[in-house]
Length: 264
Image (cartoon, rainbow, N blue to C red; front, side):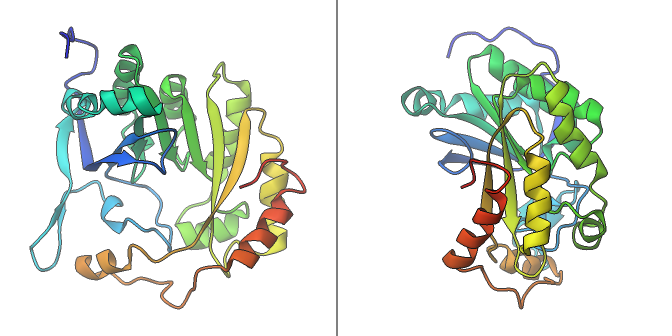
């Protein structure tokens, strides 16, 4: 690796849950995924409960610790190790969470420097953040995966712990931004919560207003995080909910496709 001169923000501290390598589900090519710790939402189906608190946590049996403090440059040192894989696969770095925008100053510095070094960048976010955080971070993002869990604000409050006004506002705000990245809206499909035709139609109608939208992706509900709830001594509230069938997923996609042409 050639010499990297000092840059603005390199010593800013982040609370990181973990760094995963060679992911193929978090953007184009092979990705290095940096999971930030801390999220202002409390979605009942969250598959990474260990990412919700900004604090470093230990399981009840004391066998595992979640989280560590790293500087922006600490993170980039790890990311740079994977640059040969990006070159051959068209991959790059993806920031996930928790909610990366909850640490937006450090995240902006990380993304800005990654772009300077020619690394493709992506972010997975709920957009539940001040619009100033979006303005600070998004210019350095090639691909933004934004979760839109519910359009109905009362249901969003009930199932995610907060209303969704800032999420909807920030999504519409991208229409006005001088940003030429990819916008992909992801909808985690949770049976009995957001899979009814009326809710999906509202989501489709809203997404049709997004000028920079590439496509909408429906993601089937799963229970991959249930064991972590147990280890942390927390209750999992959707234990009786089952994953949607392929047929139901297809029916839900058909509803959204009435408003948005590209739905996967």
